[in-house]
Image 1 (tube, rainbow, N blue to C red):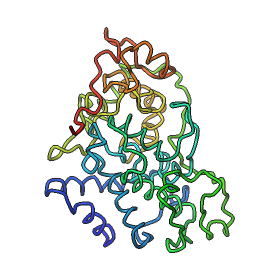
Image 2: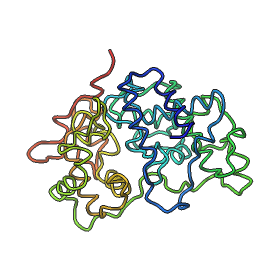
Image 3: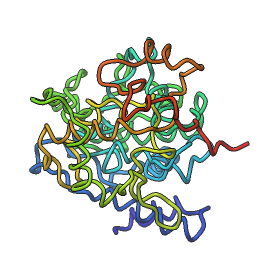
Length: 350
């Protein structure tokens, strides 16, 4: 571990117990995952030697720590055992795993999910509500500001490349910071523009790359076989994840402590895209597209926490918010998914 990493972890652990320190260190190791691509295919994110000085640098560090250790550092907003890094791998830097730098530069944007233009802050709030099965922080909450600062720094550094000098980076107000980078007044780095950078960057590696519909319809039985062979060693025989010192080091995939029925990952297609590009851990592309679809179907036909948009009628929630590849409201093994769902934010502080 280099000096910057050691300082960063020390800051994140300043108020933590010894047990939390062990777990945070384990989680931070995820930053070193192999990317599965030859060097140069995707723009590299900035290293910690390019950390800006002063207050904004402190925001970036806090944002990173929120990102990799969300369940411990933001328990008031998190209702399950996940961290942001579970869906956005390599601390939000890995290509084809919804990297933060590309996500930041994609907002504000219209989302059909809530039928409105969303700022980057609102996108993160949605993650807390659905993926984290929790309660979204309010507008300009310090956690949202710090997470946005981390993403902004990654975006500026990744776009600019080797010429990135954090001393030349415009430090936006908190109000501007949480908007995101897809706006006319976004302060692109001079070095980026001088090198011919576009004000509408291509963002290679953004999101989870789409794969074709499978030749055979996704199958639960085949998916179970793939899960048992390739996934259960990390995520448990029953999708329960793995814990060390009562903290998850591998996330649960179904049951009470994972993402809820409103999360994007509960859709079979989204899960298949993610799995094909990023799983098994460190072996992207090991599974065929068919296997990815099959195991995604298997995961998504297990109960999980309720869709928080459900106001008491499963049928109305299905009609209004679900369709296509969502298994919510469908019958599997004699039970309709969504009728025995687990509660939302069960560990919410009182």
